[in-house]
Amino acid sequence: MVKMAVIKEVKSNTQLIDETTLFLHLKAEDLSSDLRDKLVKLYSSDEMIESKKVLVVDDDIRNIFALTSILERHHMKVIPAENGQDAIDLLEQTPDIEIVLMDIMMPGMDGYETTRAIREKAEFKNLPILALTAKAMKGDRELCLEAGCSDYITKPVNSTQLLSMMRTWLDK
Image (cartoon, rainbow, N blue to C red; front, top):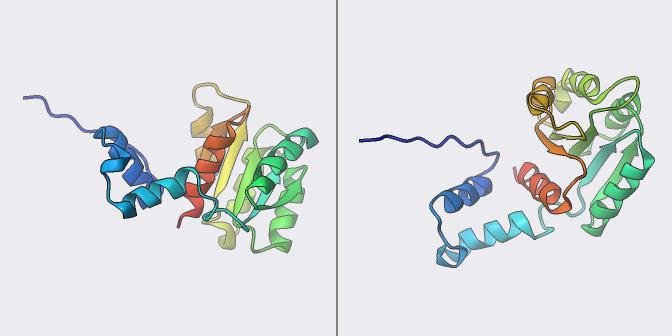
């Protein structure tokens, strides 16, 4: 007899439902309407993200513009920061920011340092910080998580994947 275990990290009940249905090869139409609705919200509804304030930290204004365009189409309120210190200052001045998109490769204070500095403050202990980076080498995800990032996504950013990840982290 072969025993098997599947280990999957999930951040919300909705994501648990999603991963379980994928693993068991269940069709969405076979789920209860309540579970189906939760999956629809995870992948396509703006209900979990609209009107949320997001801090976008990136030293390249083109990236800030591109992310702002995506997020504002989904009715999010974007606050831009072009470096780590500005990000920390904006968080302190704007306590209702609900999620942070953090570029990792920035001059001066990089995303790792910035995230560590944010995590030192008790009020930001549970603030979702999503690392956005062009670095996609083995071990980079772990470095982001060790620095205190909540999750990791590579550039160029797939907008559907980013929005789904944001919905997951804002579904608390």
